[in-house]
Length: 328
Image (tube, rainbow, N blue to C red; front, side, top):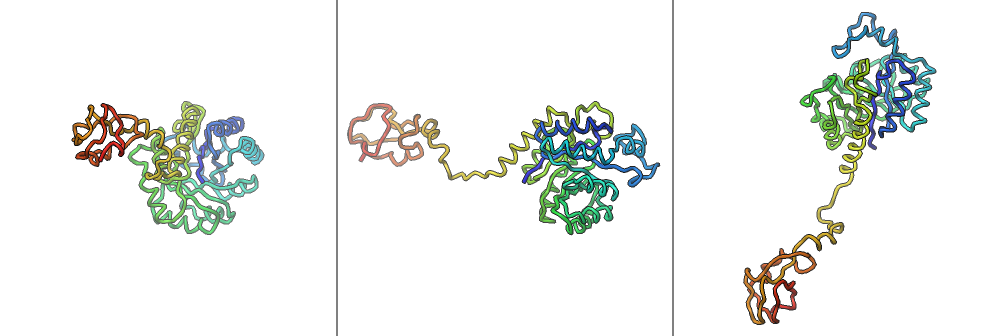
């Protein structure tokens, strides 16, 4: 099964109304999943923890406190997802956040890149038995091995190739890792796309990624940590359509020897063997006596050597489509 995850993250900037509207936009664009981040500042960060280089608009503690939703709001967001026909998904950043999402009724979990080594959190999530998407953006193989060992005790697991750079330059997309993950773990592989544009995700899908995640925003001009690296709705809709096309192509292999779809076109476009000039009965055909013209409903031009050196038994006009009965 293939999925497109619209990563809403914190683009809502703490507005419940914006969060619900982004769910509707994600659904209208063609996403299967609307993904959020569940932050409880007291449970996940110290007050003096530094902000990432790509967003230093306000202290992290203040940002998480200001943009967090309470349990009733999360229930409303989940309801908005159900009404829009998309799956509700969130990344918990603490065990308390897992407890909250369990009460809300989340169906699956996303492990963000910075939590891969937080094995206590992974153990708590595995204990739910629910499907998990594991982001790999900051982890080496040993760290991923440890995370997979823990999460493997829980529900179905998909590992997401990811590069934790915002935006991610094309040369760091690491699409080669998609195949390496599949070989190493024998699990479904996805791609969390932080590269500007469409190209990385389309190639990832062609290389076997069955889940694609991309940040969605109303506008890249919005304030916050995610909007500047998100994709706006018009492009996100095209993005979803393009991914569906790629998956359709990869899921429908073509038998090159099955020409049943081309029988009519072969007659229209291919060439038949015809006489290049009038030929009298008794003439021996040489190469110069033959021409090759549409339609292709006669003897194929590919067989012309079978006719060179044979004798004509009846008078033939120029542009006559040769038949076996015309020759000895």
